[in-house]
Image (tube, rainbow, N blue to C red):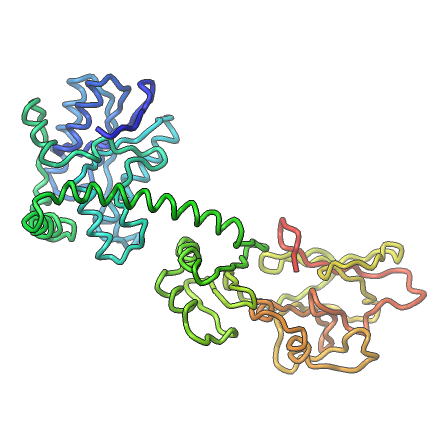
Length: 432
């Protein structure tokens, strides 16, 4: 038994399939005196056998006065609707159910019957899928409220214990099939490894111990890097990573949904064009002068503003408010401007930059400038250029939002009422 140091007062939910491993776990925790409840999922994958498994577990629990919960799931339908293979669908079904039971019935832990051989199989399964360091730690002894009391026990020892203590169990005949990669690893790879090294079980136990220690150290360093080098700005992120820290960057991006291999190829590409970004499933990674920028890809829509008020612009709010001249206070906030719109024809429009857009920058005495040229002069990062918005009236650009007003709407002497223009990220203070 893994040394989990679980208090005897703990309420433990046990995932019980009816096979040798889970029945031994159920028996052992029951004999130790823990407050346990058995949870069985009927995946409806083996016709009558699936129903018989459920009846077997229920009857055994009833005989031993153990609370029993069950779930009947249409695994094939779930797999099809969620675009998963059968094994992945079954895993998601049971873990979702266990999480629901923990939340609703206040269990302290969910115990699963994973053992040392499962750990070895998972190691090679992850290896063949191209896992990183985390995958090579294999199945952890404990994760959140999940515990694996048998993780250090071999399948042979579990079967011997079941025979010695006459613990009944059901045999899942699908385990004999080579249809699943895990089964092929179990039936062919592991026996070959045992022929090459009869001590493979003890060797792998040492591998797991070492990998977990090294992973803990690496993860600690990762969180320190994350704290110091990831800066959130209105739902996007500025990232910095020295060459020696790139593995941290790849892990962070992978957790955000960007495949490790794509991130690696983009970040390490020689002489990469800083103007190009890596786009994947609604996210974009681009280079900056000091590192990288990660953001959700958002089209900048054209929105017609028919009157003063507050208007939703993607995840921002644009407010246009008529105020008295006394409220005018020059400030350093680029997202707030005061303007004279008395001669402007409504409706207004807010949209992205288009070729040919021009304006008369305030302070340039009426001289026109192409907005594209103005943006180039600002020497902005690529992600900043992509997110520029303009506020315009018919053919007249009024404001390059967050950057500069047009000369023709500046506040003139003698005016009594002005308009306050402000763009804010919803629920947050806008940053530069």
